[in-house]
Structure formats: C-alpha cells, structure tokens
Length: 501
Ligand code: NAD
Image 1 (cartoon, rainbow, N blue to C red):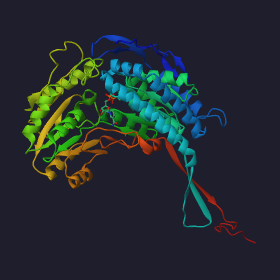
Image 2: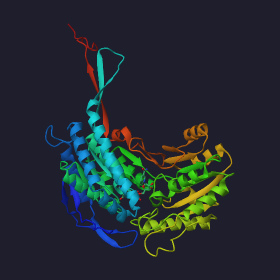
Image 3: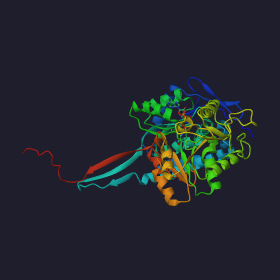
Image 4: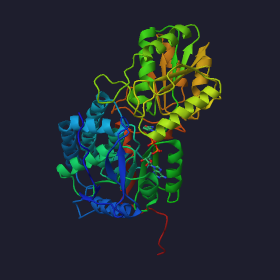
C-alpha cells in the first residue's frame, strides 16, 4: 500500500526552487509515527521572490497577463488542472491519507471535490466576462454609471491541515478564476498534496508565477506573507488565535482579509425524530475526518425525554466504529494529525474529567493500536456550560452531550458560544426547523443532517468563526474588486463655473 513521498522544492515562478536557507521539515506518518519524507521550509527570503514572481505574472506584458486574459482562457487552465487531479486521484488520496491520517475513502472524496471545485470556478471564470460591465441606474439623465469587477491583485492564501488540498483549492480555484495571481502557504503539518498541485500546474503549463506554493512554518513563511506590502489580500483558514495575528499584521497596511476560523457547533435533536437516523448524523457530524472538522457538531443537545435511549445508542454504535490505519479498508477513524494535537486532545479530556464530566465512551488510545496518534471516539456527559470542553474547540473526536427541556432552552444553549460556524437541528416538525434555523447564530445551518458541504453554496462563519464567504459566487467575489465608472453624457456644460464675458 505504501507509496513513496515525492521529494519536492518550493514552487516559484513556474519552477521548483530550493529554499534560499535550504531548510526542510520532516513529514511524520501519524498512523506509525515514522518519518516518511520531508518538505521544503520557506522563509522571508523566499516569500520576497515569490511575491515578485506573482506580481510580474499579474501584470506581465501588455495584454498578455493573467489578470487581463479572457475568463475563457483562465477556465481552460482550471479545467486542465481538474482533469489531472482526476487522473492522479488515487495517488493524491493516498498521499493525503499518509500525510494527515485521513481515512483513504474520505481522502478520495476530497479529491473528487477538489476537481469539482476547479470545474465549478472554470464555469464562473467564463461567465465573468459577460458580467464585467454591470449598469447602475442613476437618478440624473446626464450621467451613466456602470460597475467593473476586476481581480484584486496578488493574493496570499494561508491554509490548515485538516483538508490539506481541499481547503487550499477553495482559495486557489476562485482566486485564479477571478484573474488574481496567488501564493499558497499550506500547513507545515500537511503540505504534500499542495506540492503535487504545484506539479500539476507545471504539467498543464500554467503561466509562471500565477500560482506559487511556499511550504513552511507559520512564523517563518506565513507571517512575512501576511505583512508583505506586495500582497493585496490575505485569505486565511485556520484557528481563531492565528487568524487574529494575521488580521493584526494585515491591518498595518489596511490589507483586506477573509477569515475562515474555528467552531464549536451545536446539534439539537428533538423528541420527534427517528433515533437511528439522528444517531448516525450525530456520530458523523462529530467523528468524520477523525473529528478534525472546523464545523464539527461537537456540542450535542438532546431532548430530555429521549436522552437516555439516544445516548445509549451513540455509545453502542461508537464501539463499532473501525479505528485503524487510514489505508485499511473500512477505516472510519484514523489518527489525529500530530503528536502535539494528540496530547492537546487528551489534555482537554483529562481536564474535563477533573472538572466533573463523565466519560461514557473512549477518552484514550484504543488498546489494539500501540503506535500512532489514535484516540477513541469519545463521548462525554455531565458537562456544564462553563467547562473548557464545552466552550473551546477541541479539534478531535470528542462529543459533549447535554439535555434540554424546551425549544427556547435548546436555542439558548446552542447560541451560548463565541463561535458561530455551523449549527444543526434534527426534528420532523418543519415549522420548528424553520424557526430554529433562523434563531441559530451561525453561518451554516443543517436541517436533519450535519456537515454536507457543496461547492455551489456559501461557506463561512459569524462571531469568532470569522467573516467573508468561500465557495459559490461569494467565493469568487472574495477575489474581485468593485470599481464604479461614471460618465457625463450631456452636451451641455456642467454649470458650476460661469466664465466672465
Ligand atoms: P493554525 O491557525 O494553527 O494554522 C493555519 C495556518 O496558519 C497554517 O498554514 C500555519 O502555518 C499558518 N500560520 C501559523 N502562524 C502564522 C502566523 N503568525 N502568520 C501567518 N500564518 C501563520 O490552524 P491549523 O491548526 O492548521 O488548523 C486547524 C484550525 O483551522 C481549526 O481551528 C479549524 O477549525 C480551522 N479550520 C477552519 C475552517 C473553516 O472553513 N472555517 C476549515 C478548516 C479548518
């Protein structure tokens, strides 16, 4: 099953370049704890070279630059990239699974989504030319006005490790479709497939400098990118803490940012549901992607009248979740991404226990796996709203359960969070679902499910989960600036200044 990790360099100006300081970062397989390769580590010096390359590509020779190319030309490249992703799908999925511990089946879904995202934004790039000059109706006949939507410029894209390639492509595809040129800085914990994307761009002949990929640490490569005066916008996905630092750096130059941050999303289960269907969504909504989902519905609110039967079912079913090496067939829960993350999650669990929470299932390493960063699917009850485990993002396979007596109480508990990314409700009463979805303080609401995500629909949060929307047409708007153009069309003088005769 093992496939060799390719040895890559930084991808700058259409070619592979060794980092100027020649630093590299080891890749650790989270399922075995073995070092299986390494990636280049960019520093400020490389950021400088990449920004210059991206600036040249943005406005190279008159008429030949990426920004001014017709949308149809950019679409052709995006479609070629999508086709190569499909061609290499199996290998890309295996690399992803080795690198971040994601079950192979899930990594294959990700690759389909990656290709679909490039295809979708290829369509929007083609449509963009027709929308370039949108008229605005004015109250004065002597004026005409229209709006031009133009690429923002050179954009810095900083991304996390939980969906290493997909989260990057949610930014790469729309930014390139819009006519921006980009510098992608993936997470130091999982960058392998982003470097393979660079290789695909090279293979399809994407013009040099249009996409540059700088792997490396956040402090050494991400921070200089965020503060670089040659970068016109930063699109960030990651934790609240880092997002706040990136915003502070960008604020020095009043640089626009979009922020996709963490979450602590609720799932409300009412007493009129099919318990089996609801239980599957509750488990999937929290334990999918090894529990490392920004929108994981990790705070479960169950109506008190069904709570004991429902919780018993969750515990029973959790025992059957297959925890194994991500490459094993039927794996549903692989290891978490790193030693650091593993220790952090276990610390969250032990603190919750010391604060009085009860562990109904899990809470530690599965007995059958002596190596690797594996944690059992964990279900906690007797959790209070002031506990750290209820309030903070764990980013691991940990589900907290509380009960409620009324719809009002459920909504109050659901919204009592600094975060506001996702929220879900399960009930057979459609009017109730409608009421609850309007009351949720969240950017994404699921009814009778949890987590499904579509390239066509907007994605993003409120409160400390960030602002700006990715995906859909909103994702393209992230990389376009709006320019007002107003014409004076009358033959008469304006009349403010009367020349003396
Ligand atoms: P992180 O904040 O630690 O890192 C994110 C990225 O920022 C990485 O590439 C990192 O190298 C870089 N970085 C670190 N310090 C930096 C700095 N000072 N300046 C610039 N860049 C810097 O997040 P993570 O641990 O990689 O990812 C997990 C987090 O991402 C979770 O909070 C999760 O909820 C969030 N996330 C959100 C979404 C969403 O759509 N809202 C999607 C996926 C993940």
